[in-house]
Image 1 (cartoon, helix red, strand yellow):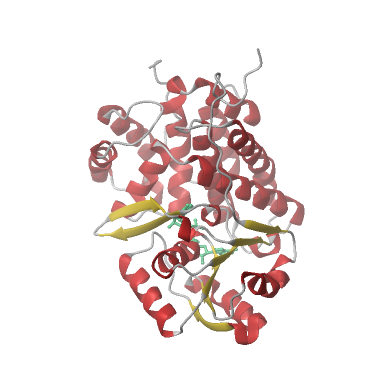
Image 2 (image 1 turned 120 degrees about the horizontal axis):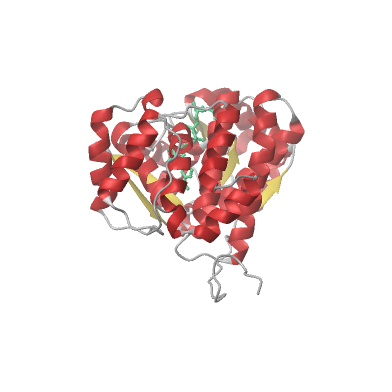
Length: 365
Ligand code: NAD
């Protein structure tokens, strides 16, 4: 009997996300008409300092519809940055936000929209995927809090692959692995469903095909388009299916130790997949099949080695003395994972990731 998704009984809930997606090279030019479509006329453009030039160009393109540019987005949305962004949006009487950039710009726009309720139009320039989710995050006192709220789901997402060609090979590869992580966790989600699993599998396929080309030929529009398509599927999978241990550990390491987001995802992913392998064999079989490997963890590890990305937490700024606290935080609050969260096993997983060892083979649950 063929099996659909990872639910042999075929019972599921599928909630489609109401975002409008405009995809293709040159789509940036369509942003003014998309703002008209939203019926808004006072746009605040939000970016990281690194994307300021792009944000200014967009504001110019919007003409009188733009009321300003706020370029103070940083990773993990510190509470004080959110406060500053909310104050600026209120001062300018903005009625719409455009986030142009990676997940940090999107995250700040979400923090502002959470309070005001005004719509967000997103123009992603990395593969983080936040533009397709209703999840917002805020970091306060070293703890990153995440929650869902329909108000922060961007109403329109404009994907223009031309904007991603400026990403370095390293940012492209690690951001791409961030997207792959969304797909992997969607495949063993608490409430899996066959549609999301199809998107997630296709997302991994698109990323695994495109990223090796992207790192060698960053200007290849064909590879950039395929990677951004994969990032859309990955974000949509994350938005529909939710997260498990892998994302939880990344949030802990980002919030408590300020580790870089995409690199942290990259280092942890093969280890989280190995940890969950015994408890989610069907999902892992799909990942392994797409990657053409004998196991999901090995396939992810091999892809990363090929991309030349960091493979140890140590190399991205983690200190060994923080591992015990990270393991404590992982089990402190209950959360879904296909395999129960066992403190000592998670400590061992983190040790493997810290030192950059290949993912281990865990005994059957
Ligand atoms: P980022 O947005 O911080 O970008 C990383 C750096 O790359 C920044 O300096 C930025 O200016 C630069 N950059 C962005 N696009 C570029 C381009 N095209 N060319 C050159 N440089 C470019 O990093 P990110 O990985 O995209 O996003 C990480 C953040 O997103 C984290 O805070 C993470 O928690 C959040 N996130 C949230 C969700 C969600 O669903 N809420 C999902 C994924 C990520």
